Image: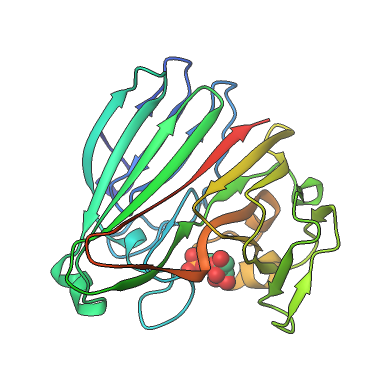
Length: 279
Ligand code: TA6
């Protein structure tokens, strides 16, 4: 564990191949993923804050228990709350793992009066990162929540980015009619502000054009939805913790139960994960 930006504690998870993942306890937020090939795979804004209570802009923000706007802080409180480091280890099957935990606090009970335990496991291999989530309902009543990963990928040039694997999938464009449409493109490119959800999306998509001209496979498990987001020019200018030209170097391909919610009976556990594999 090191002291990172603003003296916040940060875990450096290393794999024998040389791959490394840096995760802040603040928000259990992965801010850097350097694979064994030396490539940095996550975008981080140069203008982000590392202040308690503030979300970090970039990396892999955790969305829980709310996606988007609503009665809770946007995208929920998990990404702005301090998590506990449960353990780190090199697993006998060859991945390096860091496990972090979160449960209800007086602050979370004020905004979301539910008892829960949540764990996130980062499992790092040479060219692969799995992020696994588990939520346990430790209360006496049913709970219902969104959960997911708002992953910011580093790209060389947004004009060269392409997402494949969503052709024929249903979508809703948050910037358009918000009516259900169908994705007609085999290769989705980004040339404007993009903010669209693919409910019940295929479990595997490919993102082409991440830094170094590489591709990455994104495989979700127990997660229904995918969101693709890029703020483009005008929204970038309005975001204080985001550089005006940062939209050229990033794309969010988010995975989770973001449109739909998960409902858990007392004592039940929901497990979900996303595996990122460099192609
Ligand atoms: O996931 C897309 C989105 O909901 C966009 O509408 C945009 O607001 C983005 O998330 C970033 O949200 P944030 O709260 O991190 O600024």
